[in-house]
Length: 125
Ligand SMILES: [Cu+2]
Image (tube, rainbow, N blue to C red; front, side):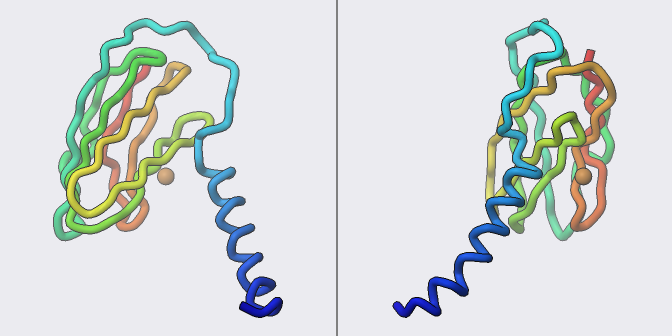
């Protein structure tokens, strides 16, 4: 491996790191409220031929209550959760299970951007 090879790789790594910081949801933020319920709410999402099920279904969720999302998909992708800060769920081909929680009240959309689709409207309170 030459020095030139490493120099060409470095910007790619930096870009990836910046993307994770902007979209990752791993930054610590002060909790906006105390937990109301520790029992996870389990939901399922299916993606098949770019069609998502469900399609904008409303889900009641407590503040800081875990939402366990099980995704079954025929292609890898990412869901966005429009909370503050934003969160995302990366899923792979097959079944992916991920857990998120939201620390302040409001209606938060869990959606896909490619293609655009609203999966859930999380009503947090
Ligand atoms: Cu989004």
